[in-house]
Amino acid sequence: MNTQSQTSPSQPDRIIIFDTTLRDGEQSPGATLNVDEKLTIARQLARLGVDVIEAGFPFASPGDFEAVQKIAQQVGTEDGPIICGLARATKQDIQAAAEAVKPAAKGRIHTFIATSDIHLEHKLRKTRAEVLEIAPEMVAYAKSFVNDVEFSPEDAGRSDPEFLYQVLERAIAAGATTVNIPDTVGYTTPEEFGRLIRGIKENVPNIDQAIISVHGHNDLGLAVANFLEAVKNGARQLECTINGIGERAGNAALEELVMALHVRRQYFNPFLGRPSESEEPLTRIDTRQLYKTSRLVSNLTGMFVQPNKAIVGANAFAHESGIHQDGVLKNKLTYEIMDAQLIGLTDNQIVLGKHSGRNAFRTRLRELGFELSDTELNKAFVRFKELADKKKEITDWDLESIVNDEIQQPPEFFRLELVQVSCGNQSRPTATVTLITPEGQELTDAAIGTGPVDAVYKAINRVVNVPNELIEFTVQSVTAGIDAIGEVTIRLRQGDRVFSGHAANTDIIVASAHAYINALNRLYAATQTEPRISAQHSQLSA
Image 1 (spheres, rainbow, N blue to C red):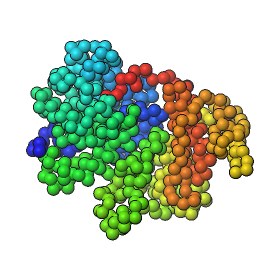
Image 2 (image 1 turned 60 degrees about the vertical axis):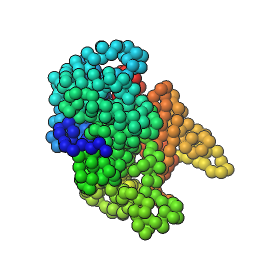
Image 3 (image 1 turned 180 degrees about the vertical axis):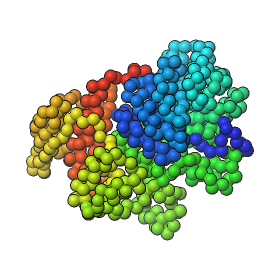
């Protein structure tokens, strides 16, 4: 077994967690976030304990620049995470990234250029010799702004290893402190990826001057397995996203990597130069924040977490088989390799009631990790009182649903004033809605649909008159019981762009209407702003 017996700045005895939820994760269709939503997620990522937040691609748009800069200002404190901005290997991109991360106590520029022959020929239209000149020149340029520079050879998994070694050597010589090895298209297998990392350690003469990072997509469902194999062969930074969101099939999932390294740390310890019996965590992640972070990202992005998703799925700690239930009741270790409380998933307790005051409400939200402004608190408190009149038992999950629903509201162009539905097995579902338009007009219309939700959506469309196609509609219960809050997530498509909407209510028809309006408001907002640069999705896959 090839283990590391000593540590150095470029070979730490722990794993650095680099979260790219706000950059690569946001490239998921429909997962576009506004500045406030990015800030909310960034604050939670800091509570989670990630080492690096890749906050966005500053050159892509004014909105992305603003988001990275605000995260650098408000989350990039001295005791907070490194704030990173992505940049192509061009001076304009690097200048934008440098300016955006400047307010952070610890800022990083992550620059990249493709190295695979297929990318060189068909995307960059450059030769290997040109890339060998551009990479070190742009790393050095980034180094003139910040000390912490990361370099990525895009599509490294399909690059000629000998050429890759040359590019990495020159990038490190120019000042790169981290070199990231991306499996951009999710093509490699664990053994291949491990061999690639091992080859880099053995064939790049100055590799001891940089930390090896890995970034990988999940097109073949192998991203997490590839990363764990990379760790065994010398990778010390893992670039991942909450819930594994990202382009196409997504990225390596942060929660899966962290818990694999935690549950199996005795196996991984020797690869990091530790005694196998060591109980010291291999990452700085506060695992008790994992479930909460997963829920927040799911709600804000509209990316539904499948029930059988590892670690954070609804069924991850559920047992239906009689044999399994019997074993777990006798000893949890019979069928559970980790405690649900370890990821912050605890039994729901009644924490507040309809007589609870504002201070008690604010205190409980702080205990749950929410810091709300006075305006947000007031809105959430009104929602809480409304819910308390309908439900006898208010759980932490109910509170989280209320807060997430309030803090993720998009700009309000259209406002729902009334929704009323008539349906039954002997009648045609009919909905009446009243909306306030962006011009302040109050308009009412009605429609017949195949069901009550369909009728509501058709009535809304008659009022707003914004072309769109509904491509996804999901409803899930936050808690058990007939009076449970229902969370509705919908996704709309207009052209090649997808917009999500989310809402929660004890009445799922009302929640469905609000979710639809939220998505329409995002769509409408996008039509009022300048589009991102066309290169974003074609060249940001590193």
